[in-house]
Image (cartoon, rainbow, N blue to C red; front, side):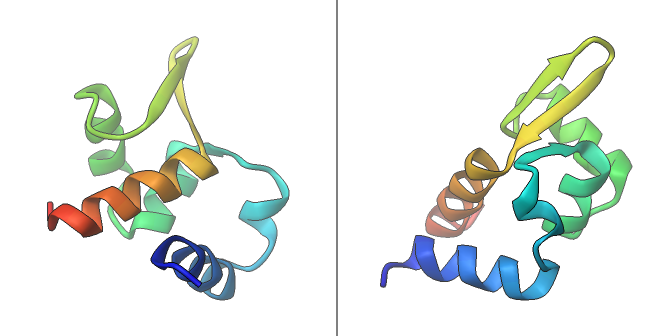
Length: 78
């Protein structure tokens, strides 16, 4: 098992199935996963530092892309 699978397993254990049932996350859900405030997550999305897509006036984050981003951030220590 690689680090990516371990990260997914740890997220699932911590968050349960509610995020895995629908892989499209709001900024609030994303903030909860990465353990920052909603304001910080929104700022990261606006700056392009979070794998988010604008849908109208809101942002959405795909869970698989967020997991990849977390893995990358962990590798580089950013």
